[in-house]
Length: 423
Image 1: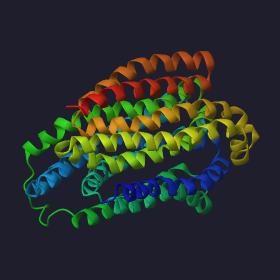
Image 2: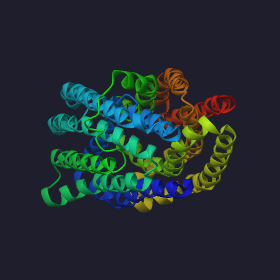
Image 3: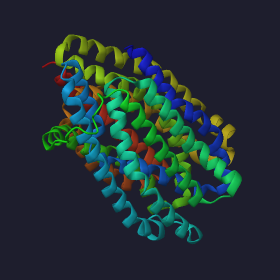
């Protein structure tokens, strides 16, 4: 299968929904208010973050199923799939239970939400807890499909989910008014539908009878030996991406969150390019490292060159045109509070985007332990700096610390990827 074609599908899966978001985000900010929209971004972040309760089995399934297909050990695939999906379902229910318990405290105390929105926020977080097991199981199903390199099917579903994430909140406001509760309900229903579609697509790939196959403790242990370290990364990496907005809310108030998260959510979409490439690259590298290390090195080096060539001019344009772009999109008042944040983050985008490639290489080699340990090290540096810079410099301080963190991440990943590919 063509790596280039798979990358294009990944770009479409992530990029096309964002085009809808570019239209609906200003509409939502206008009609539900800056603070309520800030809360909605927190709900989006929590649903995504609590998907860590798949314990890395989505990526582990991709890595191990791809290896089985390469070594013609396809008879093991049904057992791997069933074992992995059962575990992700149970773990997702546990994660949803935790969010449900925390929803009251988050809504009423920890997030410093205005009194008029506290009850609605707590209720939304409770409803969002239902989405956690749906998300973890979907992640496992997606991992299986990616092992078969069915990136067309995966991304058609991703387009649908992404469009719903941006479009349904706007439709809900349009027809039922600015109710956060109704907005979140529509998002959960969508995730249930998308999960069902993933099951139907996977049934076309995995050998028939996988549902009746025996789940194996040995298979779960094998998946977890890779996935548990992925879980550490899945806990810490999203935490370092999303923690800043929660810390901002706690220190500066929920009303300040939108001025940081809206430009951040826009900018992070630029990373669809390295994300699309490395998602397609991962199963290919996992198989090539096993039987053709020279070809794996060529794929790795070419991928870094492509990502750098695309992101460097893109990030320069973003840095130079940040004030004009935000003014045109969200107005001058919003731009005056956000443009400098965007300019600083443009450097972080370049560094973070390049880091996607060595990250994929290290994990494709089965070295998830290395990336997990790196993230632990980075977290110990990131959190104290985040609190310090927020107090000293306000919102811009959070952006500066993020750039420092992703720069350190890139340097360390390049070092360890070289070691993983020269065994």
